[in-house]
Length: 147
Image (cartoon, rainbow, N blue to C red; front, side):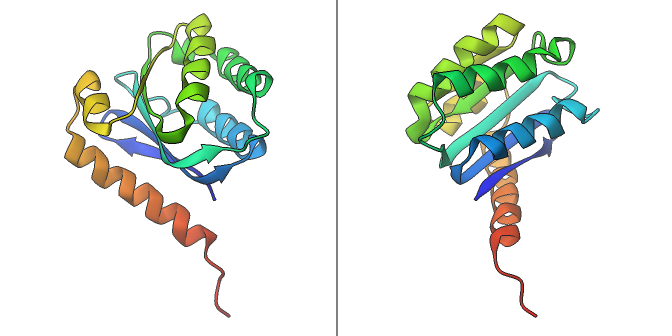
């Protein structure tokens, strides 16, 4: 279905829904690195993969490629802390975090939203509401239009 991103207070949020292709992921990277508001003023982000997974065709080489694209914009991401709530994508999320460390980004992979929010120092209930808003946006965009 895709990926949506937005902001909640000083936190950059990213939500994956359904099976996400490499092209969708690369498109997201291009949008983020050209967005003057991204990653967020406090240098914190949360990616929620509980409702989505990378396409099985996305392997180590593709994950390294995505990390390298972010790395081109090191000045935007250095010292940023990102919590990944991995769901089924735990192994690939850890691999992504390993590659991103080369560019000064700290990525910690969690299997629980509450723990991820605690690490970032943000309110889990408010973050969950923001996540639901992003999910609703993705779901409505994927519905066939009447007419």
